[in-house]
Image (cartoon, rainbow, N blue to C red; front, side, top):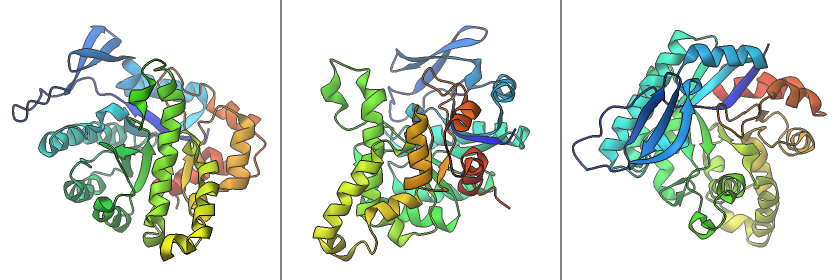
Length: 329
């Protein structure tokens, strides 16, 4: 049993009371209905039904044993990233979640790693908080694909990326509140299944176009859902780079080269697509991800890898994850 799952989520058993300053109406609440079931409510409305897999380490470990998962890299449910709060309130939520993750990983160090969160609505505050994550034994940080509408390639996040590279922390990008979701009101189920992976890919393209991997070559950035639409967009952006001399000299290599240096989870639901992603597009950079414990998760992660024709299945099972999380000796 050697598989490492980098894309899993945690919701704590409860949250602190909403801060008195700022009147944060979207402060979450876990409303427990039965012993093992709860309703996450935001702004007084149900956001997601969850169960004890979200907060109970023992239940989670039993599931891991059943599905052949040796280790999970815990990260919060993306809606808990909390970029819409005032920075001080956002920091309070981040620290609550990071303490929850650190406690789980400290109690079970052979089974869990942790990817914390920081208040990216204030990039300087977020950068300064990374030192605390490293001190608490957290291996990296989960970021949304956009921060209140601003993609991560925006210049205001430069200080954050510099500090993340200095501290050798991994960055896992998860889709969040995708652009254009308001135009999908008549088909809301399209948002998680199609708009999420498109937003993830747009985030990756802004990072490449703005030169983040050029300036920070040691930064380890991973993307959920196989990077979404990153493969066709990287090649199309490449045409743009050819016709603009690397966008005016910002890029010294092709966008596809930078994209091949990112990490990706294998949550693509198709073994043929996984094989292309892992063998051709980004060899050595693809790790397992299931989206546990949610309805669209990959329920047989070991079988999914085994059924794909992979040049290096060990890399997908554990090697890439170990390098991404800084666990490799």
